[in-house]
Picture (cartoon, rainbow, N blue to C red):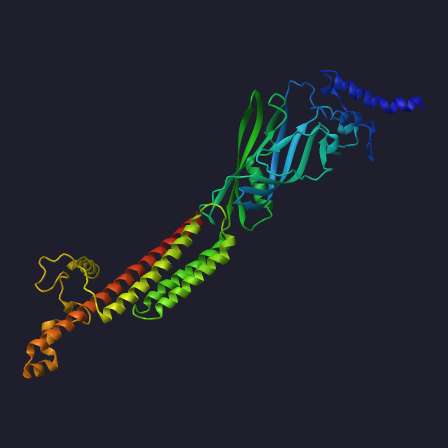
Length: 456
């Protein structure tokens, strides 16, 4: 009985001794007599497990090298208001434990075993930008090979802070950082390295990423740094994760309907300026556009001022200006048909420049043509007063009746009134033309901007 007890406890005793003697732990090899078809004997590694509170090192002056890598399998959410990135990572950490080694040839060919992580020393690697409680499942396993290399993988949902730039929404590209560091061990005790090359991490993440919806993983790059806190220096590895939003949903639900409403509003300029249906039509469009903005408000970022909000504001401003121009033209034409006001000299000159640029600066205006530089016969529907007098049938009859002067004055007043009406009508057409061209320029610029941002 006592002999069997001594035989059972002899192996752990030598293991503890090897851990305590300096310079001898690195030469320790596990006795494989307890490796069998039923696996590892339960007490073989008990002494190693009892030492899990200490960093596994035969010489504490030599830092432990921990190689890390990760695979981003999903981009879950990007919160523009809280400036948070939610992603799902498979974190992998690899380090050496010099006290766990065996010879596979003497151990029935066993080269790798799995051990519960609660029995092992684990490096305290954390993500600096992490803004939530670590919800990693409990009871995970780690693999140990015959050379004492421990490979520990754990899934984790990472909610990290990220400085988001939403100016180009929905064509924005975000660059977030994931900084891996230790909060306990300084560079004298722990160094960080890479288990995989960064391009392998990026390619693997792009191949297995599960969310192909709103966000797309572009690239992953890295940088190494040292964090100084007082007299302590900590090792760090910084990963830069570039993601891009898929704009298709927002183009279909936001830009296309808005573009259609603006295009319909531009086509309303083909309605006659004196038509009574243009103003109600534009009011209906304006109300419809406001309802559209209220319904699509949930798709827009809550914080910041993205470029798409500026676009919507310009569309709304154009529609309001168009409605005000229609109201002004309607009032102006109504006033011109009842009692046409005289047109200012500067407005006549501007109208002449818009309609006939070659005649904008005549050498000498003709006498009797006050300010415009053209006779009324050059305007549509207006005739020269002198010619009108000679061509009016009732003029000779009026002269025969003995009142030629009053008839000539009435004809000149009528021609002058008709001239002013024609000028105001032409002015309204010029305003419509300029605003319509502004609409066309705005729509062309918007379409070009969308194409350029989408392609870049």
